[in-house]
Amino acid sequence: MTKEEMIAKANEVLAEEFEVELSEITPNANIKQTLQLDSLSLVDMVALIEETFGVKVKGTDIVKIQTFEALYDFLYEKLENN
Figure 1 (cartoon, rainbow, N blue to C red):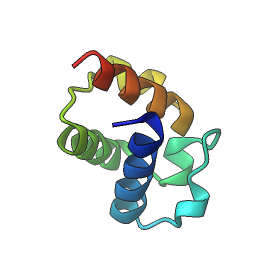
Figure 2 (figure 1 turned 60 degrees about the vertical axis):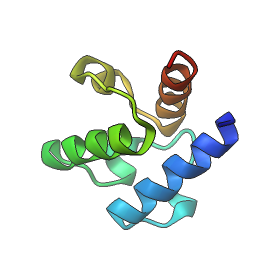
Figure 3 (figure 1 turned 90 degrees about the vertical axis):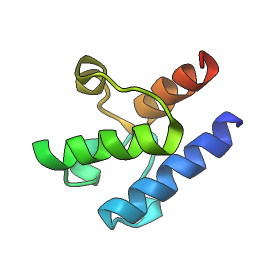
Figure 4 (figure 1 turned 90 degrees about the horizontal axis):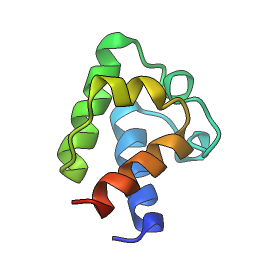
């Protein structure tokens, strides 16, 4: 999977799950604000990412990820090392 394909897939599942327009998901956008995440829905997002991409996301990792670009970089690195 290329990085572009991974980004498209991530955007698609996040937009669908959290009912936001794809156009709202931009690389520099804040994930929590864009997806309107509280602590419970943040856990849902992590589970969705883990299920969709088959990667493990630690709590310490997700705290550092503030933007979609950071999420893409994190996911791509995880997928490359799998």
